[in-house]
Image (tube, rainbow, N blue to C red; front, side, top):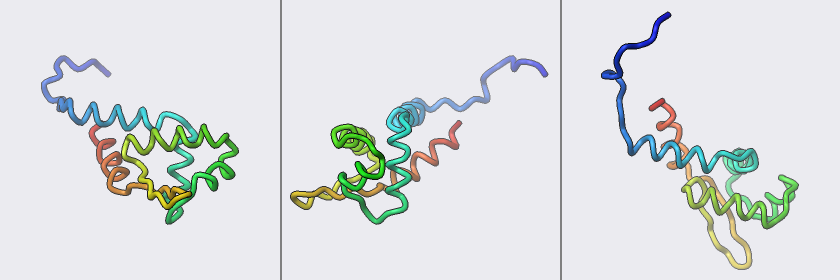
Length: 102
């Protein structure tokens, strides 16, 4: 087994690299991965339901949801006094497609 001598055949796409890194950063915590897993199996979920399921403080769950929302992985439907969170399937599919870039 030897080293390659050139990188001419390696595709470089800075946009894809940045998008993949940002998405990976948003998913870089086990609680956020668990939130996405829960939400992919539900039609929608309230913050309070997630708090009970995760066993984390409400403020901690809210911060994880904020990060996932900022990254586009979840959407929030505000129905005062509640907010229903759902997975943004399009963003999840885009992330899966970005993984194939590796």
